[in-house]
Length: 153
Image (cartoon, rainbow, N blue to C red):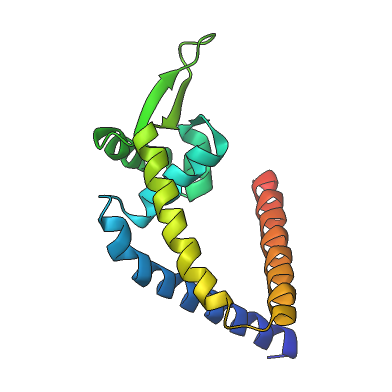
């Protein structure tokens, strides 16, 4: 493997370890709210985007529409999300978080921010800024590549 492939492997391993550690840290905390990590992601996306179509949510979560529908129905059953029909076209159904769903997202985000702030405070300021800028660039590039791939298919 050349240097860029080794770097890519290290980055993949770091992403995986961060995701697994984050999941382990928050799994118990979010279970207090009766939601899974995937359901929390759906709620967060809805809260940030406003009302969204089920197909948009399935695309965002990289799952089929029926799978996204089941996840959303569970959120509706828990009173965390609701279906809303379009005023102009009654065939269109949108999803949006309920006030309770928004509250869950806000409370979990506060807990996550507090925990990550403790981690980030351990890093020197100059390193932190460089790290964050690099992570944002990687995220932007991956998103662009994802959009380009979707356009091809």
